[in-house]
Image: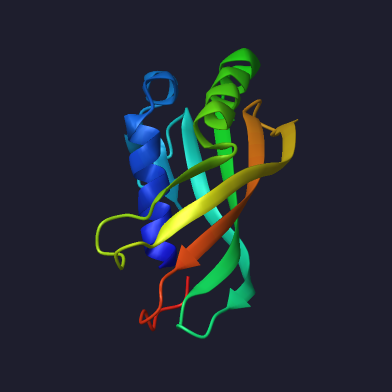
Length: 143
């Protein structure tokens, strides 16, 4: 289901005109980017913690997600982070296709933000989110 969460975030990015207008979803990658040219964003999972397991087999898990924005211009990077927050903070949405019916991200909260400048002058802004994921009963996969 982690793949479904990453795909759902990517889909939501692409569907957000304000965010995709500043940085197209094609510039969002997981791990090493196939196109490391700037600007770009990198999505990574920061761990997960089970919150509840119910008798019907359903479960709720907290998944940490970090999105890092890399840009040569501070103001442009900050604008992307603002749109990122608008699109994702306190959001809820279904997980990507292929997930069990009813599986969804029930709350995505922004919990931290850090920024800094790399040695080459590139600005790096990292936004951490806590994602509460609901998995209906009968799905043997972990979130």
